[in-house]
Length: 471
Image 1 (cartoon, helix red, strand yellow):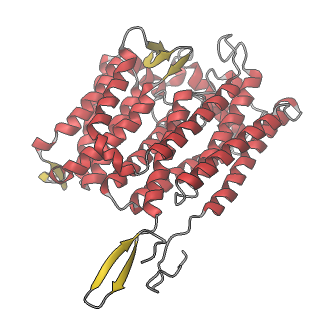
Image 2 (cartoon, rainbow, N blue to C red):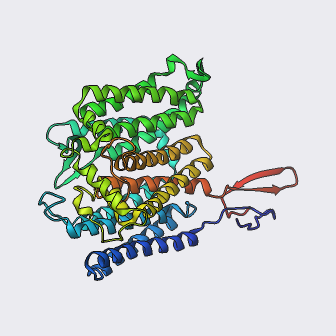
């Protein structure tokens, strides 16, 4: 903290911008990304990759560009969040490049593409989305005006993959749409719209939802008349499970709503109701739909049907092969696992970096979630508090669902690992989420307007001035 003197002579305490700290941490994140890329080349081919200078230049440009954007558009934003994201993005690029080396003809069924180059392009588009969010959203509170518009947009985005002509079924899930030569997953954008809708809705109705009904086994359950919103959220999540065959998004959206409802009302009864509804919905899905039953059967006994569960079995063997310290970057066999560059990139990283490296990556994810929740705690308005908490919780749920599925803690769901896995819509929308969190953080950490007293012969006037103003 610093204490410049105000015009009234009283010290005005304002937070430091901490942009120098951000620059040092960003430099470390860039170094990690470049080191990982060089280590992959040395491990896989015994030589420094020919494109190391190209990638290094690209990563440095991304780091400098994001730093300048934050300095100009959000100077008081959290200084730790951006370096953490750049580190994850760089590690993901290095790992995808590593899989590129041994993947042709096997991982993609003969359709070989330079995945690392595509990921670099999507990262650049993510940076554009990040900049647009910070530029357009000058104050996060303006989003509260679009509460119901965001809800409608989320429903439209979720319905788009079901429309004939543009919807696309990939590996049993209908969650993609075709946009010319590209495919896009609207659910990634719907996640942000739903967070805005839930935050705005709960700010307006939290008092009614916080009222307790009957007390059962020491838990105050909500009133029956207030169950409508959570039942609507449950029906939407079940609809996604039924029509899009997407267990992961169903879990993510419903979990996001229940947690935000609990944060807004501080009533544990909502968690109990949400857990009961989710378990009943999952059981219904298991009985009614073959693809859900296959996911659960693979979770309970993957070796019972090795032909159908080859991906999961191969990933588990890769994790075991990595052990505690890993085989070393470029020295494992992640190419033996189909789609190791996307759905199973956590298994590929676990094989080459071991349990130690995988725990370090999970720690980075944990720090991102912690910074998001810290932003929510320090935010001064209810809408920003709920929105920041919702975005952080959605990020945490997505990481838990992905890592839990790959390690067989829970059934596989098909979600992407944020900033690591190859995927355009995921990386672009996650960069947009980081832009929103930094905007809320900047608004929260800005110094309050100075209060200056002006003496006159007849009365004392209280004048509110902007920070740095004079009477």
